[in-house]
Length: 97
Image (cartoon, rainbow, N blue to C red; front, side, top):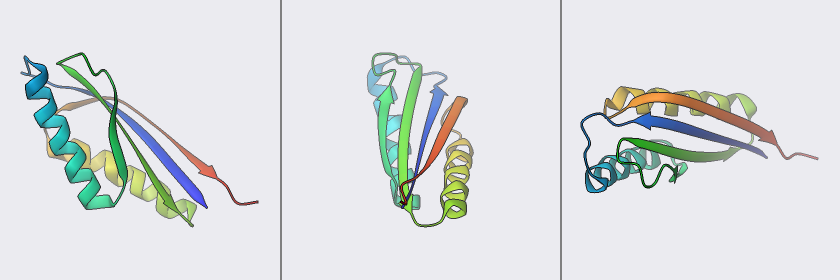
C-alpha cells in the first residue's frame, strides 16, 4: 500500500475576515475532494484570515500514480486562482512489507 500526503500553504489576497476565508477554503476542499477522491482538511493557520494551510492524503498501490495525483492536486489548486501558493510539501510512504 502506498500513501501520499501533501500540504499547501496559501496566501489569500483581499480577505479581511475569517468568514470570507472559510468560504474560500471550503470551496477549495470540496473541489479537491470531488476531483481526486482525496481526504482533505484545513490543517493550520486557522486563526489567520489571510493565510490557509490545506492537507490531503491519497492511498493506492502504485507509487507513480500517487506521485502524479499529488502533482495534479497542486496544479489544480493553483489553477483555481482563489489564492497564491506560498509553499508545498509532500511525502510518499510505502507500507508494503
